[in-house]
Length: 162
Image (tube, rainbow, N blue to C red; front, top):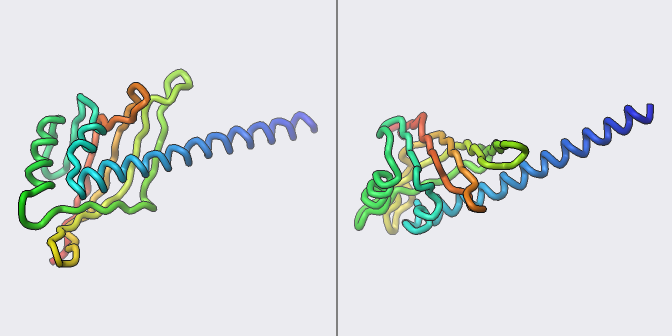
């Protein structure tokens, strides 16, 4: 009987530790999402984007195809950070964010992040105008203590109904 109680407690503690670890990762990746999108995408802080991207970054989009890191940054600067006119804005659905840790030999080496986000156009002095929503999946690799976005999938885009 004592053995059964011990096994139950041991398994419960290990489950709690695993949950805390996933909760910690969830918190870390909410911050990374904020840096990448709030600072990078919404505020056009190109250096925040560049620091987060892996050198071999690949972007997959269901409507615009595949882009390398260089192509992604070039398009980003032109279309997301226009010199004039409406500015695209991204807002994440925080309730949709999920993280899935990946281990090799009991060492965390990557995280998959899934979620939903919505896009708007912002013009000075006007309310943001909803344009579309989509799902995303990100693969982050842990490289020298830094989380770098290696692959990004943006899919299931649904345009605003007119």
